[in-house]
View (cartoon, rainbow, N blue to C red):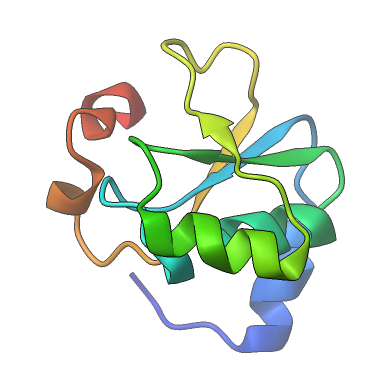
Length: 102
């Protein structure tokens, strides 16, 4: 994948059409969950979801920030037009969810 500038990344994310789900890896720790929550607040028509149950550190961090814990990813992605992944460096970190994206 080619590298792009942060400015270009923001432009592309803001240009997404339809509903967007933002999620992190299948071991939802504080940085993955918080990243998904914050990015979903910046993108139009988006919501954060988690793959699996967030770790207790994620719950504590979100509570301190006054943010709710996202719901789990749905069984079907038909309600979403886009999926944005945060804090994911390879497909193995997506667990069984990787098959839904294929």
